[in-house]
Every structure is written in C-alpha cells, then in structure tokens.
Image 1 (cartoon, rainbow, N blue to C red):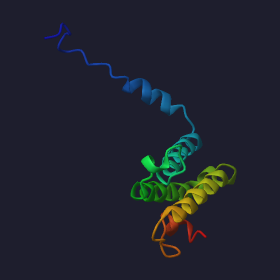
Image 2: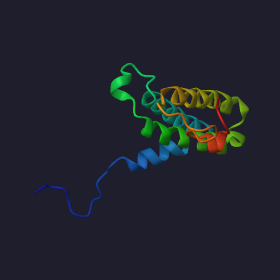
Image 3: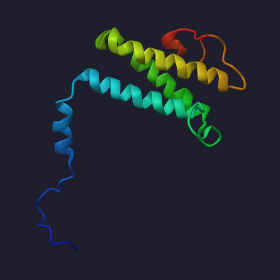
Length: 120
C-alpha cells in the first residue's frame, strides 16, 4: 500500500502534453505525422539497413495508404511548399513497394494509388 492520499489525482504528464501540442502549428503536426509514416513505410518496403529482417509488405501497404490519404487530404491546407516533398517521398515508397512485390499490383491498385492515381 502507498502513502499517497486517496483524493489526489496522479500526475501522468497529460496536461503538460496537451499544453505543448496546443502551441504547435497544424502544418508542423501534419508534416511530423507524415514523416513518421514515410519513415516507417520506407523501412517496411526494405529501404533500411537490414531489409531481410525488416521488410513487411503487408505493413508497408497500410502505412503507404495512410500516408497517401493524409498527404492528399492535407495538401491544400498545408500548401505546395510543404506538400511537394511529402508527395515526392510518397511516390518513392510507392515505387519501392512495386519493386519489392513478387506479384505486382495492377496499375492504380497499389498502396495509396486510390488517392494518388497510378504510380509508374
């Protein structure tokens, strides 16, 4: 049993996190999430240091599709200056996915292509 008084809430840092995130501009948050998705997708398609251990195309498909949806939906909100590098990165992982696939998807059926159109 602890000596903590029963009526005091535990401080889990949630209030600090909420205050910190409230100060971050939306463009920065969107870019941060997109870069995390892009990095994870690159690892899962085999573009990391140990591709044989880290490649997982099923996981890559999910990450790329989520990234494509985010980039497509947010492009008009974040502006071309921020969207262009994200689109370039997205296209790179889409192409890497296509190269890594033993059985290629039909044009327009690859990960994220329902949002971006076919990637060749």
